[in-house]
Picture 1: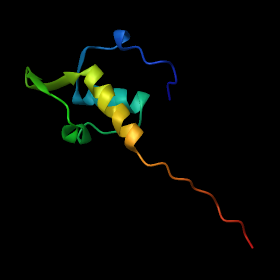
Picture 2 (picture 1 turned 30 degrees about the vertical axis):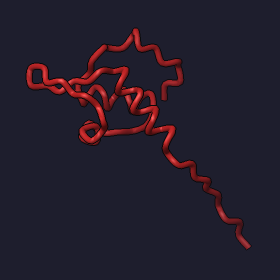
Picture 3 (picture 1 turned 180 degrees about the vertical axis):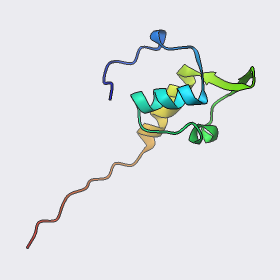
Length: 79
């Protein structure tokens, strides 16, 4: 996991679904390219490839991460 601060200037402006899934997996949480089809992103068809803005992708990923429930797990102690 890469814990360096996120710098959008070093990333491409637009990415396809595979690259988008790789970026979200690297900086946020695991996701597949197929599941990105359901995210509320504006996709532009360029040379038969769907691309979206990287900044919008990270905004939606951060919103999903913020909305995720926090669960606490603990092992039971043996009696």
